[in-house]
Length: 497
Image 1: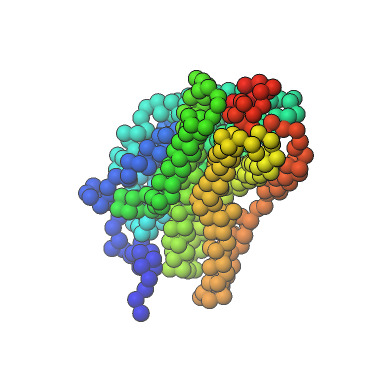
Image 2: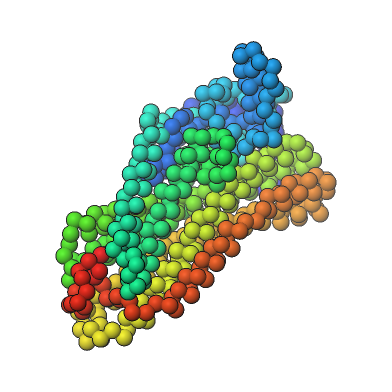
């Protein structure tokens, strides 16, 4: 019976006749990645202040290299102080945040004899078929996009985005604060602002981690997910030159839904609103469309990473089965994979902790408004006002429902840890069926060390319950928007913003 393609590709890695990963010819075998991928990263301001395709070394080799450089530096300075302990080292900082100028050439770790090559380091260059393939920035086409000054430009644009969001949040806060009859409107606006601020905030934390590289930066390990170096490693498992971006249908959906929502909002202002179109209205509509597009592309990026891990875990499982019994090598491969996976799980957990309370509050406030507005006299008597309020309600529900559907499609459910659970189930299976039960027990034990729970989701649940309770406490609210004739005694600023 013929072996599976996964097992054949891993068997080829062990074969002496397998092509040297340093000798991949510069032909059409290595075509550039799709330009749309680099455009997405550019639009999201995710580019780096340094080279993005850096030296690939396993954790053991990196620690040896790091300690050796520290020892040489100490000798140069004439000190006898011993190098720092490896216990304080963060794998993700060494692998993705370390200054690449301090390392040797991009292929230095692999530039040794066939007998002495570190196969775990080769694993870090695997492509979608499990074959180590070394590339640089020109090979994949990122050199034109990540130019000198990209890192500074990304930070400046994020600061500009943060300033716009602060202004957008302060205007309704100042107008509606301490006004009991505007509590519902304030919650609607606040939910929207918090929602579209999620990505810029997380991206800014990623920049802080990249620039600091040490100290308290290790607490923000989830922020490594938005490091372009991390994303490039994710892309190499997806065969982007031949197959293009995965889930193009979701990419179209993520881009299109923002345009549809903003187009619907513009139509409401033009055709059913009684309020004047002001410069603030135009600016808020344009910025809203930009931030909704950023959220859509960011959500697609979550799907991109998840799909990459699904491909990688299949390859790793086949590799472990093919190399059963070679504990040191397999544990090195497993560590590198699970360290990146745990980083992604922590990121998704934090993202869900922000998203779910916003979702619950949006549902509660929209549902509360729909129930209360049905009893307003002017809405019942005037068909024009009733039509305007119906469209405003549909807009709110469209925003809420489409955002939730896209998020759950990208994440593959409510959490991302299902991939680790499925992988662990396969390890447990081979622990009973494999030739080396002790080998599989050690790997299973290593995987179970990653099962670290968090109170973030619980906190999210608590805030969600508070939001639901608040929905029953609304009374005497301004419920009719954009229809001045319905409430002539209320100021235009309360009705039109």
